[in-house]
Length: 133
Image 1 (cartoon, rainbow, N blue to C red):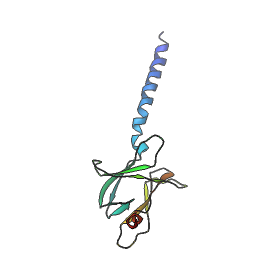
Image 2: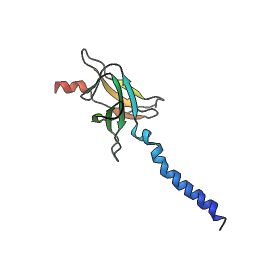
Image 3: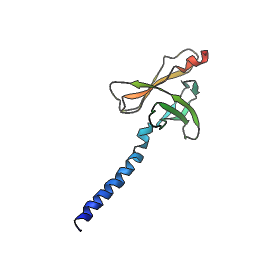
Image 4: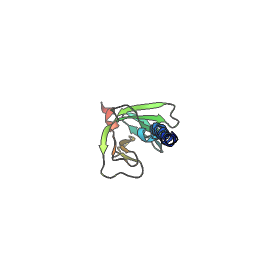
């Protein structure tokens, strides 16, 4: 009987630690990214004023393209966007944001967002075209 106790204890610790793994990866799974901007930017119909914001992916099974933008403290949801999947060949060590070419008198519009280390990202429509609709 004494020979089974260490094996049983190791098995119990293994099960308990595997239950904690999803909680430890929470920030990576929702791709939470804190940004600070010094000029207005447009994100699919919403203009974000200079300040701090949090962008993250809504954690829905089967759909990983819904991006939410919150204020810097995450107290207020600003917008929810159905993003278009974007891809790149080489991942970057840091998160990257790319913008559409700026137009006179309009805020720069967000084009793509890639989370650090990912080759899959999110593309956004040029929100400045919404004004014409």
